[in-house]
Length: 382
Ligand code: ADP
Ligand code: MG
View: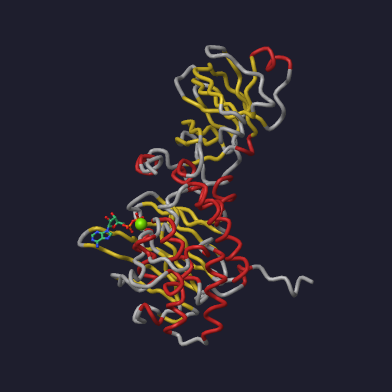
């Protein structure tokens, strides 16, 4: 059986970006990107505005020329191949449809120029109209459609000839939430059915998580994290990714030894890591839902389990969010923490009360880059 099962890591990449750069004067919009894209995967570029996502995608599509570096598809350089010969479909946030053609003819266009048989065109266009829920609008012109409907036509038009690679740059950004979620589900199912490779751009982390098999996190023209949504969330490779993806608590501490750090005059256990030296300043990261809140009485009754840390704090604010509660806490040393508890399980700790916070050592991430203020400054602006 193991001979048949192959992980995608064994496959040669479909697309490789090698030392890819795009400079505008002195400014590096794309700063030395290296990335392998697997055949058939759904990969998303996620990052805040201006981080270089669209520029990278445009170089892949052929609308921008790299300042330096290579783009390889199946090992062949694409850099000199014109856009229409790349077997790549593209959907932009604002896609210009042909204003004089109706919806049906717009979607049919890529098939018409490829001279498919009329019956085949009919069949494929019907399937696309159904997919994007535009059957009743088949004979309208773009000007008679809402922005969201126009974008669905653009998506259908890019997909109708089933290109090997589909590039999508914030294609759902103009749609309302419900329709966006429906189309996210449709896109995911469609990707699974067609088996095409999709490279998708968004600044919306939830959208990235919902759609993608892997996410590349962009910051200042560089890829600063690459992996599945779950890997990037559970074990962020750096403090920037930790703060960009989801909510995070950061505690500044000083390394004592391989397995302990000092936080506000209190020793805490951390996962062992090679190369950490005594006196080194480190940043601990704990997710708000990974920490447990106890009253002082509860903490005195339940001994601290092995492999856990405990610190004292005071409740500053409790916010009820329906399915969950968010606590804002402050420690004696002035560090701030946010904790999330399911409302069904929670005994509410009142504002002002002294509490104990516990979390498992295994759920602690340790970073050595906390004085790299740039990393944290860029976060949270999305
Ligand atoms: P994103 O898609 O992540 O929002 P872009 O790739 O569009 O970011 O842009 C990255 C950076 O490059 C931005 O700072 C943008 O202003 C700059 N940029 C993009 N295109 C040009 C251009 N034609 N001339 C100068 N600067 C540009
Ligand atoms: Mg963009």
